[in-house]
Length: 149
Image (cartoon, rainbow, N blue to C red; front, side):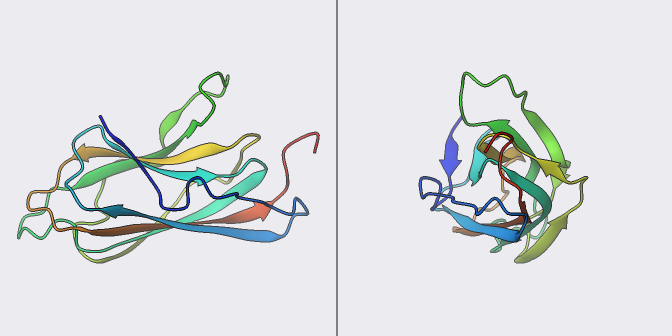
């Protein structure tokens, strides 16, 4: 299993912690077909109340009968965290983003994270005919700051 990190994953994700709207924009560049169980990881900073996620992709599966499928959830970045990963919180298995060029809005109840977490896409089915390209995630919400900050 490979863990494919977004381009800005290691960049500081500062938030003002004052309740203002904030967006985190990042992308993964896929030059090889991700395998089943591979993850596509984006960073969500601590203290962000996430209320929207938009995904935009190039046509990563150019077959006439595309098969690429993912689920979208979160997982703690810190391996010693007590936060349990929820692999399909934002979208259940079978999401079709990347089967054709375009976008998709995920629908879920807003959630606030008290620590940095992965926005994690998990590949459930590989692309039938992979074409290199990019997958962008735009995470929107409010910058509330972690408790105690």
